[in-house]
Image (cartoon, rainbow, N blue to C red; front, side, top):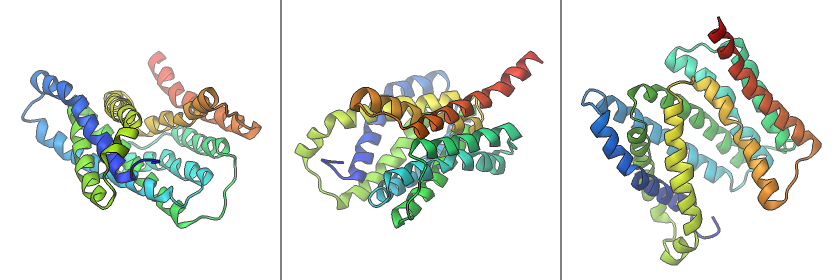
Length: 264
């Protein structure tokens, strides 16, 4: 963001993700693809792209005025919202332990951010709205997992995001030199954080329900804290460690029932 605008960044990362996934899409369509699967998959990918773009756009705009603590806390709402959307759209009524884990993860994220909230600003509302779309996105990915077209689904999703972000970026400055300066970050986010991560998410959702996946995904805050310690020499406060322990406990709670069922 020090070099280019938010929508240009979203557009470039998305186009790069599509380019990275193109060989996998070609192979996948030859080996797995079917004319009976493709239309339904493309439809869901379109909805996923709309949800992704809307969530990313709201989050980017919200961060202009929202505090860091509030943003982390409000974005974590998707952990609680995902079981609700999963129930409404997929008929997966969450078990009691999923609600416990989701709530524990939500509280843990809040504690990891310092355990306090300032007066909500306009940006905070936008970030909270983005959490609704992030939760919806996880559920849509879960619906598409049955097609076994993870790379094609992810690439199509990012085509939608790239087109919408490119149109929005027309109002932002476009300078080749600025893009080159942001090149390493765009490369990392486009290839690893976008293409690889969301393809792996699509593959994993074949064996994981959206409600459980949202709790596991909340461990991103733990990895963020670890990265901050390793690369920026930041350390957690005592309340932050409590939050980290709560998130880790939530991921364990999510997995225990599956193990019990397998023994039965």
